[in-house]
Length: 135
Image (tube, rainbow, N blue to C red):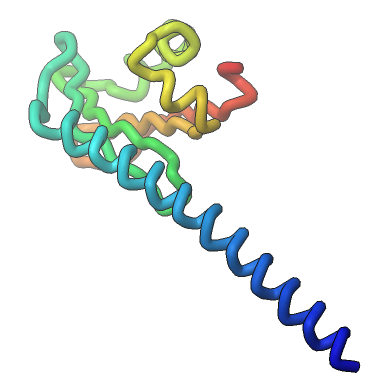
């Protein structure tokens, strides 16, 4: 009986230690991703082209890196997005796979979320890039 108690206590101790180590690693990654978002947000908003404004970056609780854009200077942002969708997705995938500055995403299997909004701030399109798409 005493051996069972010792074994059980040891098991829970080791399991708790494992959880703390995993959680602290996630917290460190979350902190690093948040700092990246803060750094990006220093220069926002910024026009990337005639129609696209980069508004901000954020990090979800699940360490998903989020980019927010606004489509402007057009009466039909939906059709503009539709016309550019394939090119945008291709450019995003290429950048994530090849850009050395984005290595943190590749090394940590980070999901990237790109949200495109109209002038009224309603999300009109999103692109989700999961690790299986860029590895």
